[in-house]
Image (cartoon, rainbow, N blue to C red; front, side, top):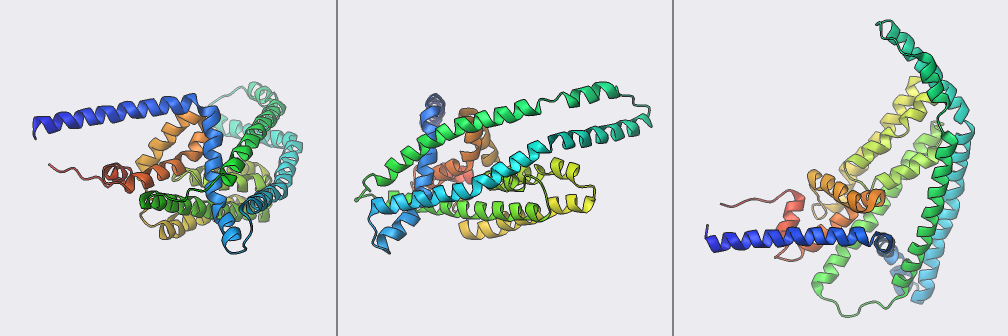
Length: 336
């Protein structure tokens, strides 16, 4: 290889790494503003088709269409939130019963271990379990919920400004192509995640699992995380189901049926809708989860897949960055 070309590649690679570090630092430093802005931008992309339908088909003024769309979203929250709160209240009321079931289960395990001459201090374990600060945990969750609501208000304000702002008239074909593909990804992923969460929640509710609506909501959120999201969503209800049901059939169904839903939607339906346009290699997904999680915490983990997909779509449209897009797909081929 020509030494000059090799030196240029090294310099380009070094600059790319330095630029990545600089961007990561800026994103981490501006987290309080950037996270609500990115969420608002994704919401804007999500509800744009609804607004466009009202403006183009129903001949409604854009501002009115924006307000109608936001009211529909608010109505959806008003319908869902009481069910979630009711599930939490029911669970907290049953906390003592679950605590007793855990104690009985632990004692049974200790009795089995003693058969193999493994002795554990039963009283120490009992005291530890009975002193678990469940109420403090619940208070912490509520305080975090209040903090979330304050950030949600900021997201709503930013979303409103993004929606009522002037729409660009003259844009390049490349930019239009990127926007259309991003809209397709976000909207389709939202629909499939909604259906997955609804189906899982309905299964949990039909089987009589407590916190069914919460687990359904978590399934919706976790479905945005490829590969590991569906695994976590299936595993989360197992401890509650194990303590709630004495019949192992229910535990088996609570694992099996949501797994079928995840596999059907994630491995059959989504690939047919997305094709290869949005394909990300599993290693890319894992690295993106780590990267965005380090920068923006749990919100970064939830946004990792959509943000990385948007980056991949953008890189795919330009010849100079297309190799990076191929690398994110895991389809890079080195030529010697």
